[in-house]
Image (cartoon, rainbow, N blue to C red; front, side):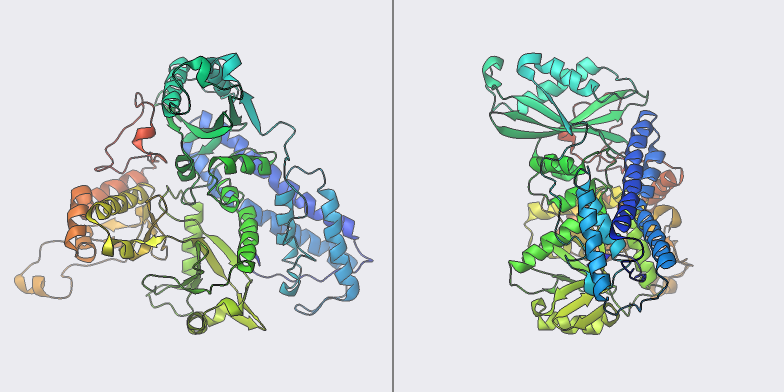
Length: 619
């Protein structure tokens, strides 16, 4: 498997040109440049938060997503030039390497491993080596002899020059002084509105949630091992900064995150305390934009975070930290491991088959594989458009309502694991993306994302209470997407799914548009009865015109669904609601969409509070 992008074949170098050590050093220098810029982005995020430059943070987040591919292309081009200058004989793409060339590239990997012995980011550097090598070698050499299919350098107990986390001891320092010092050590340049009051609220809320583990008597309820450990860097995203840590008491880990926001006066306040694994899993969800966080040793951060929400794979943790290529590497390794320890077959994913994508899954593995159909039966839709939409989602603030995807090319899977029905379907629907060689099926391009329960299937047999909650979530998802300047386009229930925690998430992106590109209109009165009864509209309709009154016809045929929708989200059927939302987006408003429920908030003084049932302006 290799990262996305067009294949670029560069001639294999002879051992008499640049030596393996020189090539290894060139690749590592390319990675070091990438990671230095990656860290600088996180350091800039701190300054942008301090100055309340929310647009700057969002722009930085979008730009950083492209850093990795840019650095890989730069490194591959430099390497190609070096090899071209010193080894003029051209190699034919796709042919086997000569024996001396095989030895050269294996020696290059060996030299690279030696360079990583004391490196702070060895796992990410291995992934960078893979990305560059995949632009040089043919797919036949995508194995552990030439690439890091398996890791070569252990990251256990790795740390930076500055340890990844700090520890505070409430028994000796006192709880309030410990919390105060914990916050002060982050060194934010902007003032707190009332830090002592915030610390008291935090302590009260935290102790309330620990009452079962900690008896009333403070002297007895804090055990000798009691300590507060927090990661050294703040986690920045949109308008928020987060302190992430854990309380250890009697060997039990209690995860927590403290949300910091700015008031309209430019002062920092504690806004929320998240205190369960599910709270933090939601904060670090695959449905949200990536965090900006300065990590000298990212493996140490991931190990710490994995202790807070152990159900989340490390591949997803790396991805939420902005290291999405490392997330892809870990996903691939996990996936290969699962394939070798399972026997079920790939088959079509449940739900209504789409006109744009063919989707299949492995029942024992919680992901789906999405391929763009060769023939798309939608007017104005083609492969380039679909890819552009998915890239738009990747770069956009997903506000907890759009699923992130990993994009791969040249994915080789065992033919024996495909059901006959699925293989026949793929040969019909995506022949240009399919290559069958021996006992392998190679997918030339595929999106992989978390598997969810399709909302349309869930609603069929859902009890009244569950249906009510799901429809409330569905409407809320539409509101939050609109607030983030995203119009879903096709809002049918089949395009939404439910996560493990019951959140409704949108995952069909071929028709999404920016709210600011749409025109939301009311249907004008019919000029006469004949026009009203006609099957054709009596009014002009532009390519980007939307008539919210029509939503009810497509969405509310089921009486139970209709009752629940109208109870919570009747304004979504009115053009005025959409027009107002579009106007705010056009004016550059960045709405407050919270990654935690109101019950987790510590206070509302000085901060905007909206009723989520009537307004999109919710964080």
